[in-house]
Length: 261
Image (cartoon, rainbow, N blue to C red; front, side, top):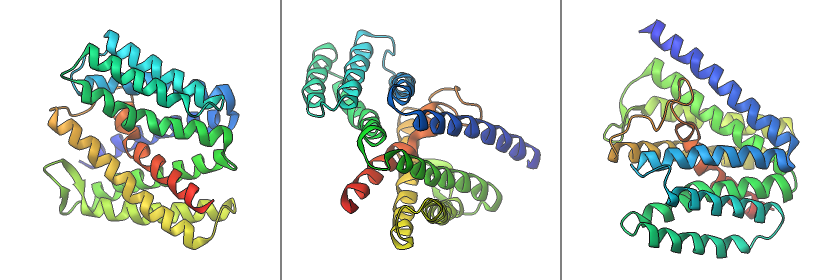
């Protein structure tokens, strides 16, 4: 068991390092480079989302949905922040015409997947210290995910919500919150972002948000009888499996930033 845990841990670490490097590098470059990363990543995410709900991932509906959301990416990138509302409504109407029965899933993809990406584009291009805020968020989410996996696997103990995710434990959850706070305070102090009190509050709430995002995706997989949405990332599953908590945390972080700015 120890060898299996160690091997899985090494695979997860290597995969995480590669992902973190890509986000860090393209976030630092910004502009079209960061936009390119989001365009490619969103294609993978939307594809996995369609597979998760047993939708045709190569259908006309999929490509129209993807193209409209990418058009919205460019609108936000160029500062036309109201036009995405019109194109989102257009995309939803087209989705309704093409697939009335599964239409709610099309609506859900705009909020669950697209909206966090809109925030990333806005932060990276227009917000003061936006690139640094994205890295801060990444630090907190990674601290939460890693500590939950490590301490949950070592300490084990009582299951958190076995009906939704049988592998998650209370020990992993509690340590994920603790290390989210520690990671937030350390990063904020290192780059002189904000006070220790605010850093602690952000770390605490984003730790909860990350865990909630993880559990929510586990719930979606459970109701669709799926273990992983894909095998894209060794040790993690699909890109959606890796970014589930990140998607929730992005939105929460954005509202914090707006509130305190």
